[in-house]
Amino acid sequence: MADGVAAGVPAAIPTSMQAAILTRHGGIDAIRIRDDWPVPRPGPGQVLVRITATAKNNTDRKVREGLYDTSDDAKIASFRMAGDTLSFPRIQGADVVGRVAAVGAGVDPARVGERGLLDFNIYPDDRADLNLAPDYFGHGADGGFAEYGVFPSDQFHAVPNADLSDAELASLGMCAWQTALHMLTSAEITAGDHVIVTGASGGVGSALIQLCRILGAVPHAVSTPGNDEVLRALGAQTVIHRAPGTNLETAILAATGHPPDAAMDLVGGEMTLPLIRSMCGDMGARRSYPRLSIAGASNGNLTQVPWTLIYLNQVRIFGVSHGTRAEAERLIGWIRAERLRPVLAGTVPLSRLREAEEAFADPSRGFAGKMVIVPDSQWDEHGRRYALPL
Ligand SMILES: NC(=O)c1ccc[n+]([C@@H]2O[C@H](COP(=O)([O-])OP(=O)(O)OC[C@H]3O[C@@H](n4cnc5c(N)ncnc54)[C@H](OP(=O)(O)O)[C@@H]3O)[C@@H](O)[C@H]2O)c1
Figure 1 (cartoon, helix red, strand yellow):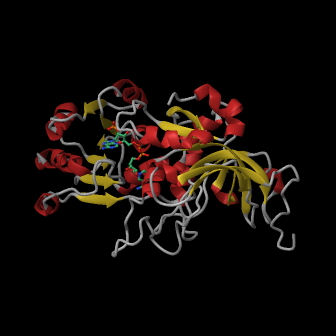
Figure 2 (figure 1 turned 135 degrees about the horizontal axis):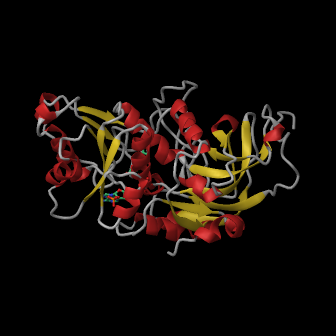
Figure 3 (figure 1 turned 135 degrees about the vertical axis):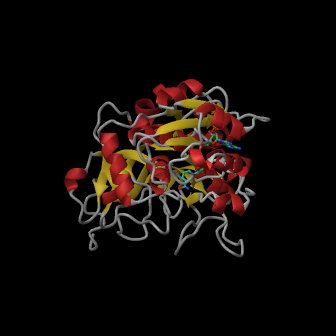
């Protein structure tokens, strides 16, 4: 204990645990479920968390499959904005909920037992309003698909609200919510703005709808048919169906009645051009410059857009990845104030993570909101009542 590392580790904490280990880039067989993985110990400034629920995100699959390529020579099959990042073996899972089980040096031992939600970012520095090199727990360091994890104490935020179960709290995780908020703040969305949201039934999309309402904006959802009821209940003013053969530009204008002020795009591919066109069709009818935030490309990484459309109509385009410490803290405040509504699709035990990965990636998956993974040892208490049939 010379370095104080194990100062707050109670004797009851085991030495090995259940964990899903990503061994390499690849298919679901790259994930190994182990029952003998070492339990980490909290370092200075860290908490050891006994994990009860971790929400899944699209990024888990993309990272596993090696779909991010940010290097010029295409040699790095994961995103790297600066310094070291993904290495194997790695425990994925960004949106972690659990109880503080032990603390490292410099952390108040009174925090043991506290229920909290992780701000998933590995921030490059202390700046509250700028995050220039996003990385996260579950990618650049181990995340939540395990029984225990170690995280910075100042990013494990207490959320004591008894009305929110652990699985519901995980569904409010920062990976989707902070991204959604940063999309809206980047595009300077204000009260009265009409905002198109693509990928609306997903984690980020459903968060965008709720956040638009909190900011006083009017969200219009673009989604596959069948999600109308849940999207309207979240606050969508209209639901525009995306389906083969639909002219999205016309459908948007028919739904909104006027050019939307802004578009939040998570889908990319052939969806982006009609989104931009819907904002630019009648510039004389606008109150502000057209604004497009893009944070995902579920439907394709390449989009052909004429630059004349962009510069003649003065379209503002914002690329968004994660968000800032200040935005995470703002969201935690809204969670504590119970202003954010969890959209929990259901839970899956950690031992079935590979099946969960397949179900999550199925384009006809037929559920809205977040899938949450629960360690088998926590299943009876935190998972069973929300079990998602796979
Ligand atoms: N930049 C960042 O920091 C950041 C952070 C989080 C997520 N993301 C990205 O944002 C996107 C949405 O993330 P998410 O967590 O909300 O994902 P998700 O829960 O899987 O939702 C994705 C939604 O996109 C829609 N979609 C449209 N075309 C699709 C296609 N061809 N394949 C799959 N889905 C399609 C579907 O909604 P509808 O049926 O309603 O159309 C689907 O529910 C992903 O690309 C993800 O990687 C980026």
